[in-house]
Every structure is written in structure tokens, then in C-alpha cells.
Image 1: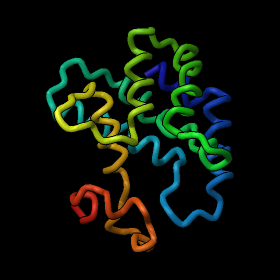
Image 2 (image 1 turned 120 degrees about the horizontal axis):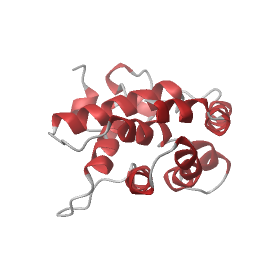
Image 3 (image 1 turned 180 degrees about the vertical axis):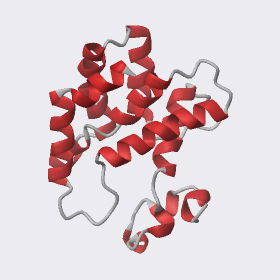
Image 4 (image 1 turned 90 degrees about the vertical axis):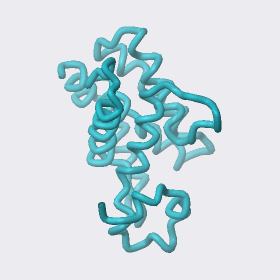
Length: 164
């Protein structure tokens, strides 16, 4: 996965991860470091495969997962939605990694939408839906010592609350 290696080795990607790490120093809740990003990337791809998405491209799923939270630090430092900020930061990384524009747009849309559940009756792009769910299921709420303080825990899918 050459394009993914280009993203991971890109100095800006590393910078955004270090900014996330700095902003989350001392944070007791889930963090948004490389482990989380890689878990989401893997789950995104697996969800697409499980659903029979024959068009699922591993590099596209991994790019969406690895880039979905790179703007998190901007949310901590200002009143900026990290999903929108992440899509803006991701665009040049995707271009420089060699993704085609036809691949970039679904990735950016998935990043922008990864925090929102699909409105009732509206089908979203399979990549967007898989990234949204992968981000939720990447959280190990069943093993978290601070769930009673977490604002997200009550909204997490039931399957994520249990050891499965």
C-alpha cells in the first residue's frame, strides 16, 4: 500500500499526530493517536468487506481511517469541528500520496461525516457509513475506567458497551 506509506511518512501527517498528542496530554478519555487511527482504518475496511462491497479498495478505506481525526487538535485549540478541519488537512496529503480526484472526494466526505449518524431514510456512501461505525466500534468502552464521566458513552452502540 504505497499511498498509505506516503501518508504515514508525510511530515504534515506526523505533525498533526504530534499536535493531537500534545493537546491530549493528561486526557483521561479516548485519545486520537496513531493506534486509534489504525484501528479505525482496519475496521473501516473490514466493515466494507463484510457488507460485500466489491468496490472496497483497501487504500481508500485505510486513508479515510488514518486521516479522519488529524484535525482533532484544532478542535481543542479553537471552535472548529475536527471533522471539517481534518478534511481540509487531509486533501493535500491525499493529493501528494497519489490518490486520484475520484478517490479523494469520497474520502474527504467520509472524514467530514464521520461524527454524524445518517439521517433517517437517507443512505450515505458506503465508505462514509463504514468510517462512522468503525470510529464508534474502535472505542473499548467495556474496559474503560471513566465511562461514568464520558459524554459519548450513553450514545455508543450497545455492542460497544460489552466485551464482544
